[in-house]
Amino acid sequence: MPRQKRSTAEADEPVDKIDMALPEIVGTGKRMAPEEREQQIVEKAIEHFATHGFSGSTRELAKQIGVTQPLLYRYFPSKEALIDRVYNEVYRWDPAWEGLIADHSIPLQERLRTLYTAYSHVILRREWIRTFIFAGLTREGINTRYLDKLRERIFRPVMREIRASYDIPAPATRAAQEAELELIWSLHASIFYIGMRKWVYGLPVPKDLDAHIERQIDAFLNGTPAVLKKLAPAAAGKRSAASR
Image (tube, rainbow, N blue to C red):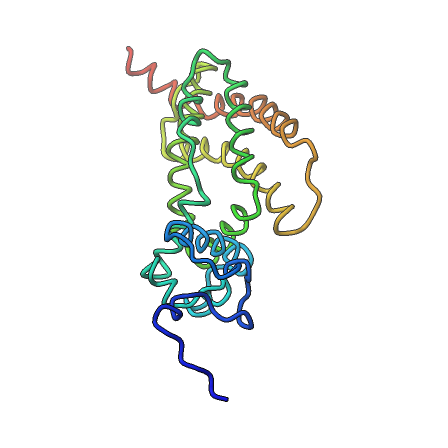
């Protein structure tokens, strides 16, 4: 018997159960409020991108997350629009991090320990790590947008605070500035790699994450000021000559 043509209203509903990758989207067939439906699509898209990456057509994406392509387009006019929404959902930024860095009422080591403990609990999640890796392979824009923010709002302010705390002059050359940033890149990378080990390689990671972060901060502050002082002579010489 030929299959009956679906009505216009039905065409906007999820695909048949035989085609569904994620049956919980359909549930009992109860209609959802548009805001709930949109959020559910975003959540399923995050899981899809974290598992399969960003390649593939919108038709394939819709099938994987359990909706029809027309319904997907109703909420997100393009795949790019959906990816931008996923970015905003996954890569959340806490403005309190920036305020903490500049809070001189708290010792520097405690500031950095608190900052990176909070930061690690945000980024060391499956969806964060895996979408970031996939984005680096197929969508440079996501990574560039996030890393630019990280560099300007975390890296540079942290290095300024270290220099101020240890009375170290600012780097005098572009090469010295880049060398300074590489030091904090190393700290950041050591924390990010914990997520790589767990969510990409399936390797064991420290059970007490907070204690591990505290040790990383100790190591960073024990070595970084000494290295910065080695980078500083050129800047100190220029300041001395200018004061004559």
